[in-house]
Image 1 (cartoon, rainbow, N blue to C red):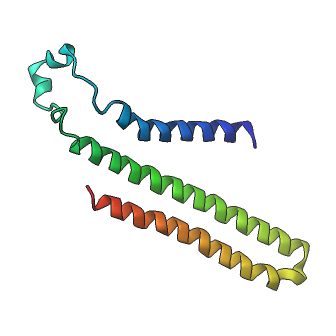
Image 2 (cartoon, rainbow, N blue to C red):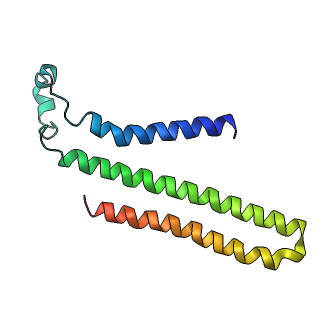
Image 3 (tube, one colour):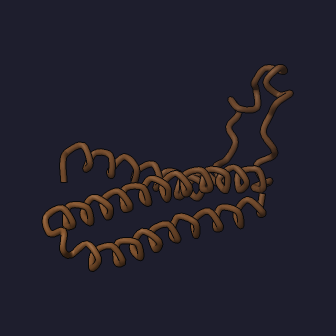
Length: 130
């Protein structure tokens, strides 16, 4: 694994951890006096009261939908690319085995695509909760 992939993986995992555990850590944070002494222009667009967690829940569901679909599409594209590249390399090395390689390759591509479609269905279910 190259250094770039390691850094990218670490950044993605850190961002996911921040999104998932940030809401738990700051859910019951007390309001400070500095927040209550803001100007009147800012109070016109003030967030909902601290006891109202519906707004934050909907915001995190929206973030989960976006990140989930992005990660699923990215992972599915990587998996399909590697599958097709390996199958084509195998066929190029041994053209006589093309029939034996083609069917498992199509089956693998279909299963990879089904996982991406499954994440799309989960995102639609989450969208119904907003």
